[in-house]
Image (cartoon, rainbow, N blue to C red; front, side, top):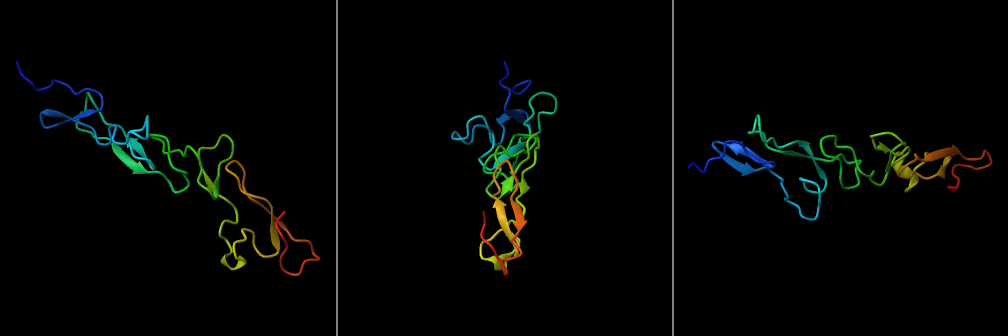
Length: 141
């Protein structure tokens, strides 16, 4: 008998005449269910059968992701601080006013406006104009 495989098992790929484990397979035991390290997602699957020479590819999640993103799509599982996602959307958007005015010492709304409601993971920040009686600035709601 021969000890060379005729085809590779799941999570293995062919290199020359041998089956070798795919990159990222069970590399991170603290990241159960994922083949790539935290902060990365599987952008290309490892192929067993057919074109067995294709290895798994791990790609960094977008900066808008909190820590993990879905395999193949890269969709953030949760948005990072400073980002929000509308119901039914796949994209985390940068909150309005986020670091827009570096001279406002930490304020997120432009001068002459105040934060009526903060940015959350499900809703954007709402800035409203200060009352006409205010000179330059007003306090957030």
